[in-house]
Image 1 (cartoon, rainbow, N blue to C red):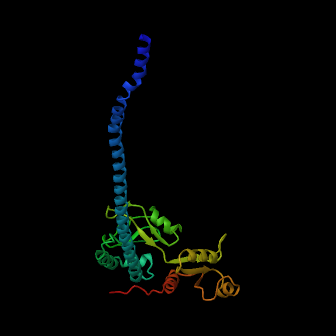
Image 2 (image 1 turned 30 degrees about the vertical axis):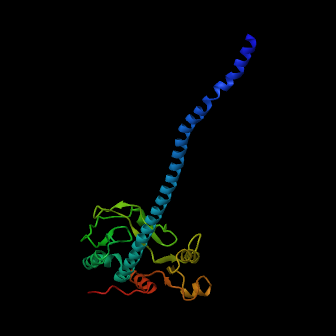
Image 3 (image 1 turned 90 degrees about the vertical axis):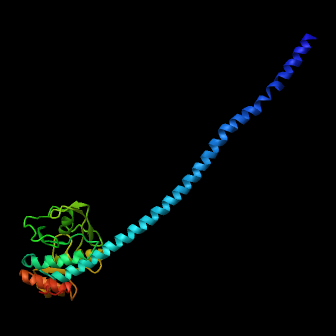
Amino acid sequence: MQSGGTAAQKADEPRAANPARPFTALLIAIIVLPLLLFAVSSYLSYETFTQEARAQLERTLDAIHEHAAKVFETHELVFNQVDQMLGSMSDEEIRAHEDEIHNRLGVLDAKLDQVDEIFLLGHDGHALASGHVYPVPLTANYSDREYFKAHRDGLLPPEGIYVSEIVTGRLLKRDFFIVSRFDLLLTDVVMPGMDGRRLADVAVQRKPGLKVLFMTGYTPNAIIHNGVLDPGTQLLSKPFAVAQLAEKLRTVLGKGAMKQP
């Protein structure tokens, strides 16, 4: 009888242990469910925040793009007005009229919020005139600046407009960046490697509308009749005087000399 009772008691032991399982499952649920709800809520909040941040970023980028476009449009207008102001004046002529040019540049950049300063550099990198500083120091030399080297060494981007890094001005001691461009290619017809005509073709392809002036020591008839250049090409025969070059540049660019007040 004792052995039978023991067997019945053992058979009831698993049943006695079963009531604890619901409490274990409830305890797990109490711990896991809040974590799960927190994870889902965090994910939804992250998605909402990401979408709002993306929308805000897009609006900011649109505003920056609009402002940048306005800045470049203003600089394009400045380029054209300064071109008309100077015509094809040489460095020496600009220096001789520095007072007048200073006043006219000052009036121009005072009207434009997008332009901080307008100054002119000579072919050697020395400052010729400025809208803020008069007279410009004869020692002000920018030939080591990257924006000057880009023009001097032909390193401009395809559109012909160069935007510099942030630099500190040597005249006004303010941080700024440079926007500059070129409008005319002056090249010899005969050169080692790529000749002038192929160079002009590449340049015009990269910057449509670029004016080209060829120089040559051969007679124009020999150059054109031999098919080196097309009829009607702007050509300057060497040797030539500075005044002849200035007059030819004025003709090619379609600009007159600077008007005196």
